Image (cartoon, rainbow, N blue to C red; front, side):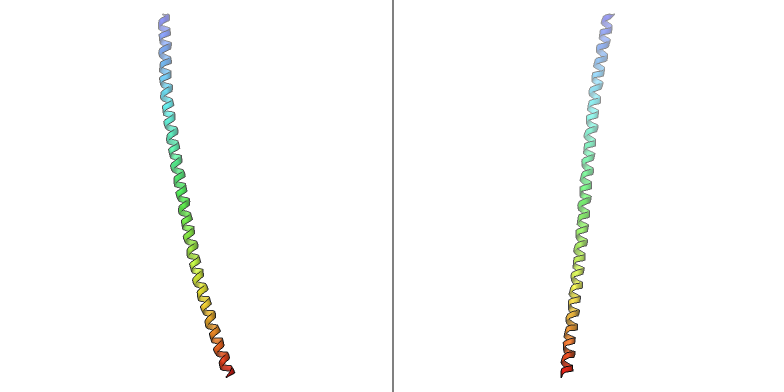
Length: 94
């Protein structure tokens, strides 16, 4: 009877060890999967930040071009007005 008890305890211990190993493998697999998910999320977030920065850069470039064009037009208007003022002054002195 005692041998049966020892054999039963040994079988239980082996079963627990196998269960523990399986649980450990599942835990490791779950942790690896979670790590992969985190890595994918970080990559996606990084890409979103890169895309946002590209959009900001494009917007700034567009605004700079608009301002440059407006400054050119303002300069052209000032030059035209200056030329007109010179012509008026020349006519008044003649």
